[in-house]
Length: 54
Image (cartoon, rainbow, N blue to C red; front, side):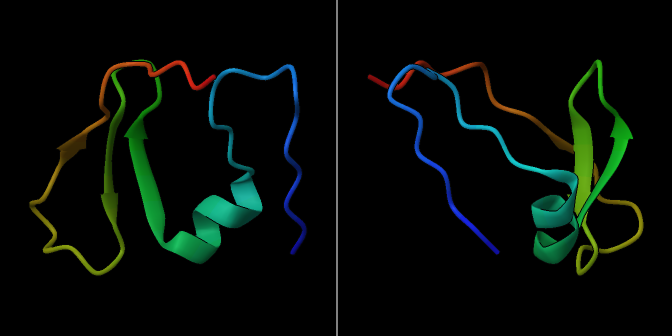
């Protein structure tokens, strides 16, 4: 797996491959609802607000 650091990008982006390797399961992209494969079945997590990295 490769890592790319962009001097112009201000947000952290991950690929579908990395999300899969991390065990992320998405329930709603628009609302940011997700869980990890190792979480109990009823677990639902909410994404944090957008962060700008400079």
